[in-house]
View 1 (cartoon, rainbow, N blue to C red):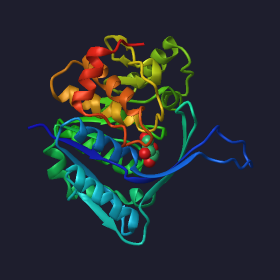
View 2: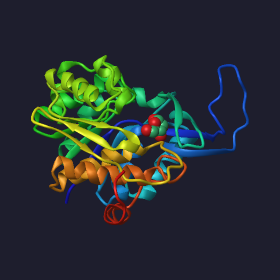
View 3: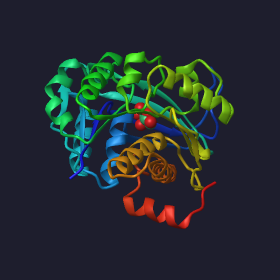
View 4: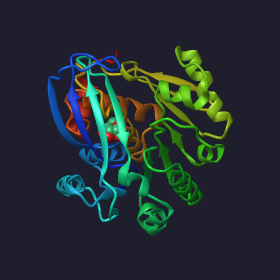
Length: 308
Ligand code: RIB
């Protein structure tokens, strides 16, 4: 039985749908308000379990109402959560999200308890982490923790997938410890310091990460799909055409779908196709976790819809 481990963030998302993004200093009237469980780590865990793979979450929650809400959600979804610790005197992570009519979003994250995920917790859960077939990480917990975990897990021969969001500079050592890095175009621009407006620019920018020791880079392009860049080849895998309502969490669905397909023996290109379908479906509902698809939905989309 395969197992996915997610070491990362748990946020409660306060989301407003808005007619347009406002100017600085401007007040506008929103069209809807929602409270969801979210956070890139939690979203990836939810996507993974909904796609039918047993999933373990490693992270921290505050000893507050949001923390209780999140733990209940993890329990209800059947995500293994004995490795989620509760920390006193720090609030559960939170995100303020605005979504416009085209489905684009703006997000402010306040890390709270996520920044208490430390080396000690990695050590305490190493036995569980080592029992996973792949470990997913993002950058909403301290960089020191991500680097430490990646180094130890890589040293043990584990597959590590890093979703470098929110983007921040990555050390060569971290790049060397990851089996796959999955930035979007904006994150790749920040990581590489290079323009990423065209496919050629994306390839060149991703190449700089390979030069620093990354083994393979998967650049997600939203409605254009994703590009795989390895030392041997570059392949563009088109997206599936759907009516997007809210793109929040689509990147998280992509990472989970990609990881699952890989550990089930698919090639990286096939895995990206599966991930593209999962990401497309994730945009069809308001809220990051609300739209996470089942495996049946992903397979149906892959059979019935053409790529754009
Ligand atoms: O990737 C989407 C997530 O980013 C949201 O759920 C929010 O919590 C932020 O972490």
